[in-house]
Image (cartoon, rainbow, N blue to C red; front, side, top):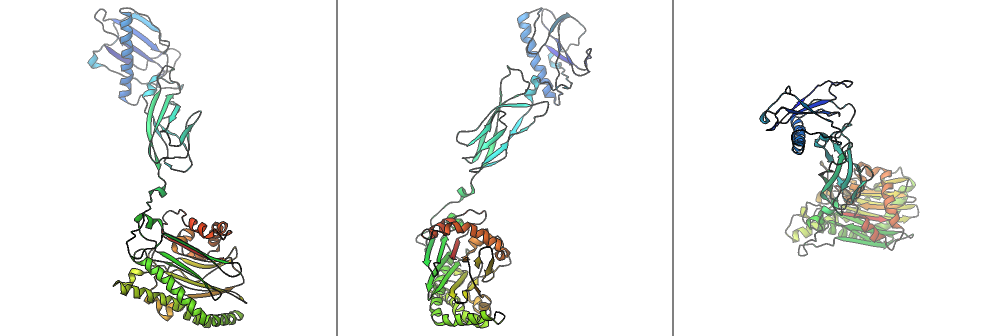
Length: 515
């Protein structure tokens, strides 16, 4: 049996190439010259691949075989499906070829956008943009291979149970939901072409949608080795009552990086209220120093202990010199800072000394106990609120008045590279270095004195320069203020807040407030 497609046949009243005359010669033992001619009064698409032509050829070969078997020598049939009138005629003029020399040629256009069955061999590919677990999802189904001549009608889009996504009727091209499972998700699409015949079976294809996991779920929470030296609680909080119905509150939480690796929290803090002075210390042990958790604890404990005792001796003198300076603020700060040197400066030195003594007792290098330190004090005077601080390392401290001003009590120690800073050690204990790091200010009123380690300042302020921007402090206060109204729960609420998610910021977090 052979089939030859003859193209570019002119038919009256129709443009060239809109018709194909299909000449089918069926060779049979009884009648080799019987020719069945069928005029296909339909438009067909232009073929771009030889294998598509061959598929169409094979399709009609099979149809004619079946027809011949049912009619034997002479037959007359009408295919309602394809509107194909049948003409029986005798002829010996049509080209013949054997099965092994089948020649298939089809070339035509589809000027009226009519669909034929060969469209179902067109390769259609479905895609969806990636989703993320727990986040609202809305996306249009992308269909590669669809054109104006090959419109796809989607009948159904199926997702695995429990994925949390669905297709929106009636065209099922929009996918919405909130993914509940991460990983690769197999999506099934049932579809047809727009003008496909009614008895054509539904086509089904599948593709993979990738649902990204919640980054939080990738972090493990491991407990530190209880037998390791210098154990420390994973979190801590404290509240102290101050004067004028103010409170001092602090919270500290182990960072996700430490939770993931099963190591101890390196941050620490200490609060005190002594001789009408509010005293706050926060410290951040260096992550690269294996005993820094002990270094930070020694720093806050020993500096606060020394400061409380020294304020007993020098507190009144500081008040007097502060009042003198306040009456003539163009004058030198040296008398006040000299007294701060004897109190806050020597308190920092006491911390350094305690760290070195601990290192010697353990036959270790003091650098293994490296830590930052911010030590602050406040007292209400007749002239206003007096604040003083010593600051080495990163983090931040500021006297904040909502919507009006921010007074930074020091500068960030930044290294040559991101994440580098200075630590509390003997090199920081020269008179010049101590005086450089001492700050004080006097204000009529304030909203809060805030101290933070870099686990808070890095995500909240992003850059060191932003510490000087009032807008950034206002934005932080807007987050904190709602949880500060109830003083019975403020410490716990502050601790919960420290668990906020910030991509790339997973260090320990400590914050202390006087408000």
